[in-house]
Image (cartoon, rainbow, N blue to C red; front, top):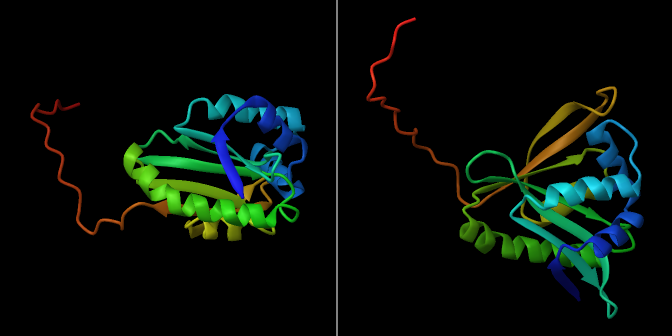
Amino acid sequence: MIRVRPFDDLAAMAVFHQLDVNDHIEAELVRGVSYSALGLFAEWRMAQAQGPLSLIACTGPAERPFALFALGHTGQAGVAEGALLAAHHHRHRMALARLALAIRDRMPPFAAQTGIRRIEARCWADHPSAARLLTAMGFVHETDMHGFGPAGAHTFRQFAWTHTAPSTTAPPAHSDPQPQEEI
């Protein structure tokens, strides 16, 4: 059984201290520099405070933290970015699978309640389990993006979850009641 609770520093630090090696590599490739667990924690701590959701997932009778996940603002209306980091994926594979299904099932009502229609997530293409985890959560692969990492030699995969089907109608034309000034 897993339990999800609000973000707290000690639980998050416990996850960062036992972070899956591929999650750590992925985080470093995004940033282009080497990071310690404390550095990654500090960056996550700062970013999570400004998003609409930041949670810790725990497992077992002792409710040990094994993953943290958050949604952040992208600056675009109705669009959020998602992130999930976890302790050793192989050791926590059953808990991660349960968490993925819980996220998949709870994402639609949460998104509807908060006005989110699209959640984007990226993962390192060479990560052995990230793409499967995103797919299990209901995300769909959109494209592979090249040029990541310090030398631009790594590929990341872009996934998205959408609350509704894409519109096939064109947006309304913008009408400006003010006359345009010629330059």
